[in-house]
Length: 380
Ligand SMILES: Cc1ncc(COP(=O)(O)O)c(C=O)c1O
Image (cartoon, rainbow, N blue to C red):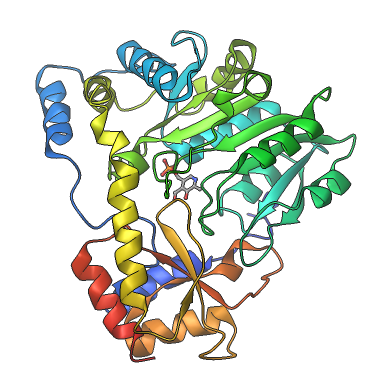
């Protein structure tokens, strides 16, 4: 049988290569973005309890109502934003799915979507599989900020959406008020949607506020804002998240969702509905991970890598300009094979493989893992 690929440009990614290599060489893995410490026991027990209490059948298509209500309360508390649990929140199997569904909801063949690079790996295939066109704007090394003049040049009559990611994976950069003003000046009076990937909303450092689209009524009215419980509660394997969008947008979003996943894992939703009310569990996250970031920075001082800035997410970039002229991909592979340390090269987040000689490290790991990694890196 011959199949005409919908994603002819997609091959084996460096993420798959690095994961396989990390396992093969038993490497310390700072490549993949997941915590290696346990999730909260109370939350795990609540899921167990929900299962034993018989919450094991299909949840409603938009999500378990008490969970949606708890999210609405949380959004009011965090962003002073009123959202309707009934009409504006949809529980999804992960943040990635929420982004995919949002894009599928709005895109028609030929539409254009502005995407910033370095970009999380699902964005571009999600757009292309819908027959739409990706319009790339590179964030600027080494701060990875948005060059709004470039964005203005790339906006056209065909622009259907701008895809944002704050805090950013892999760069750890975040949006500031001036970015919001620039964004506003571009989209006001247009039909441009915003798809906002905010899965790291609670991992933001140095007392910076997370500038969610939900804070700004004029941006919120055109936004699909996407979140992930996996990132907040150290359970990335749960693949549970949600999308918040105005009622008319959510209505269309749910049409796509209804005939795809339809609904999500019921016991986890029942458990989260209760656990979300423990505010400390998410308000403490930035402090917890900031300590890890700072510990990793201090450990890395005995290496020749130079760390870049990370204001959010659990990633930090490091340049190796003083160590080698190898391309970042070759170096990442060699570090895994020869030194037993896995990372991700930043070029993996660019369509054209732009190589700033930066590797991505995930510091959302146990202290002992970070220490073992730094020890290996100090030998390079
Ligand atoms: C920027 C970004 N968006 C979305 C996700 C995925 O979220 P989920 O696992 O809930 O699909 C990740 C996970 O690495 C991410 O880094």
